[in-house]
Image 1 (cartoon, rainbow, N blue to C red):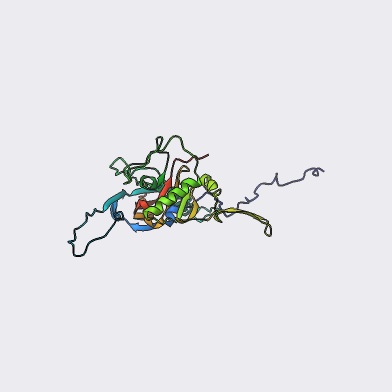
Image 2: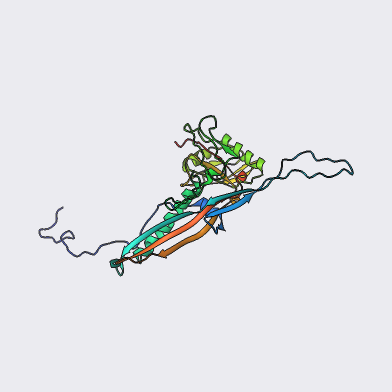
Length: 318
C-alpha cells in the first residue's frame, strides 16, 4: 500500500507538541546499609575520641581462710580516636533557569540538591568501608576518617603467609592487602565467627559484595540455606537471609560500596557515626546571575571495640 498523492502526514507537519513524560527515571543504587544501621553520636571536635577496655583472662581463684588480700595488677583503658571527614558537593544554576517550565521537577535547583544528597550518602558509605588510615589534615590536606578495615585486627582471616597483614588497629594505618587473594569460603567464615564469639562479640550483620554473596549462597548446613522449587507458586527460591552458627546468627546484607575483596562480620552496636555537622543544604555567596548551593556533611567512624567484629580479607573477586 502507498499514500495517496499529496497526503499531508505527520512528517510534514510543523508545530507538533513534544510528548515528554513529566517524570524522571533513575535506577542508580542508593542503598547505604552500614551507614544507615550505625547509630549516630555527637562529635564536637575534628578529632573525636573514645575509650575501650577488656577484662583480664580467667584464672584459678582460691584462697585460704583469713589470709591478707593483695591487689591484683590492673590495666588502664585504651584511648582511641578518629578524624572527621568533610563531604561536600555544590551546584550552580543560572538565573535564567528561574521560571522555566521543566519536565519531571518543579525547579532545577531542588532536583539537583536532592541528587547531590543521595550521591553524598554513597560517598560516605564508601569512606566507611575504605581501607584508609586517618589523616589529621592541614591547610593543604583534607582530613580523612579511618575506615573499618583500619580497625579490625583481632578476628581476621587473611593471607598472612604472603604479603597480607593486619593494621595496628588504632586507625593510624591501613591494612596491607595481599597480592595473591584466595576464594571466600564457609570455612573461613565460620572460623571468624568462632573467633568473635571467643572474644565476647555478638555479631549480627555481614556486609559483602554481590560476588561474595553468591558464594555465601553455597553455604551448606541444617536449614540455613533455602534452594528449592515451590511448584505451587512456580517459583525457584535461592536465598540466605539469616545464617545460624553455634557462635550466633547473622544477617547477610549485600553492599555495593565495600571492596569486593573484603567481607565484614559486624556487631552493629559496636560501631557508630560521630556526626560533627549533619547534612546541610546551604546557600553560597552570589557572584553573578546565578544561584549556588552546597550540600555538606562532616562525620567520622567510631569503632567502639573491634573485638566484637571481624573480617575475611584478601578474597578473590572473580
